[in-house]
Length: 155
Image: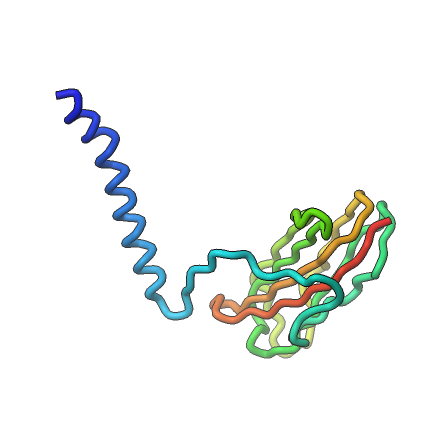
């Protein structure tokens, strides 16, 4: 009797949740443009990276501990004229994320504007060291992305 209660109360819900979760994941991955990404995107080892679609504007090679890192991003691809911008700063020594921000629904079709709209990315890093900044822009459908990166130091 006790083993039947344990089975019904604990084991069966776990099995059902795995089956339901697997079926939902399979349905989502069948949609066009969907893929399962298991690893984070590669980051630059040093220097500016990217294919020229994105350009990081306003990034200095060195900052003081009280000076904020302020950037904007120029997009040179009309297919990315409306989408999301993600900015991440990594500590070059430890590969840990130091600062991160997302700017959603950045639409600037035809205006050749820089993003983020209505201001820029602004973060103060108070720990001296070397850092890597990485920007990713994805289109509104999430099917196309562009990346760029660079390095800077805080003294």
